[in-house]
Length: 487
Image (cartoon, rainbow, N blue to C red):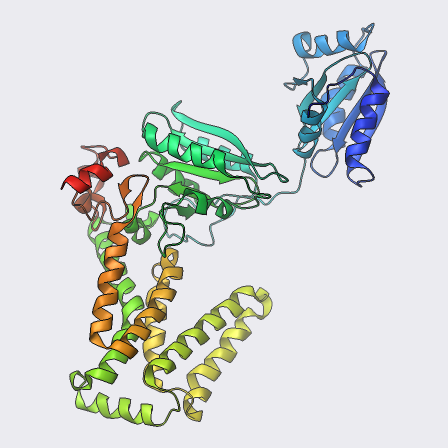
């Protein structure tokens, strides 16, 4: 319901007082500017009173002229004033109330049926700092902050062409969080852009405090283990994906951006790949693929081999495995599940505890899991070694840590109950599931399958910059879902 500005200063002030009540951050000051009765309204936790004074009150009080009414003052400020701000006229009190919550100051004048909104944001914000989740040796050390407007500047500074478009949306019925839809109009696929924009417009959440609230609405398979929506807190990574024709989503109040679409091979890439020699970057990528399968399958393969095909172990190792299993009270596959769950508990405890005592959790866990539990006979040393190797391999691909953890437990159950046949069936189901995912009409495994030239240029391997400069690449070069079916 619209509430028009009446021009009656006292009546308009009552509306704001009714909206904010006794809120401690509500600031309202009546004053006379150029012989016109006015009111300055702002929220002083997100807007600065000093900023409002310097930008508006002091210059206007020094104006030599007077105005007959508030409308004349408003017309002067919007059309002829040389003040160092860009005011915006508002005719609706509800729009003015929302402007206060975003750090703007609203000027009301007696006799004027419109109000002026101007920016005076002055709130506490975290400065630009290095990324904690995507650490790199070379390249930029900047990461996104929690302020959307500052993040926009980090992006605009890197992509300096007029093709970069940043659309502003609102999400959350009660929070009305500002969300930015970012793309390059010359590179993005129109169908992809329209699909993402349509899904964002259909979201009807009560609150949005993080981009992760929006991710499930943008995924093709929101209940699957693997996601077609990527996450990054690095401006250079986001800009690189934008230049590939992708779409990004940023929300105010969070440093993490969504990348759409996001393909499975991208989990094994990082910005350091493009600063390293091509042969070394290719080696590291192959190593990460190997580490992924080790992290997922090694405990299950060990349990399956020990229970169903022990003859594949060397004789010396087999005796130690048998002795260890005989000295513990649990079956081998339950022991493996217990150790992996214990590792997850330790990880969560170290992550959630204050940093000052977080290292104590790791120390106690190492003493209990690594020494006391083995000496007591609760778990065997072979399964501790296997679990530790798989956990370390999982850390090589941090963006896949969640599906790796679940798949590791499933492979342990499959190997412990069904043996090699269970491992093989689950592996085939996992691979078929990954290959069957499509994200906005494009295969999730691109460019690995179906085959595309990008697999050798910047997929499984990475070529040098001299070779890559000869041709450009965007996701428009990837096969569509229909093309994949025809092949």
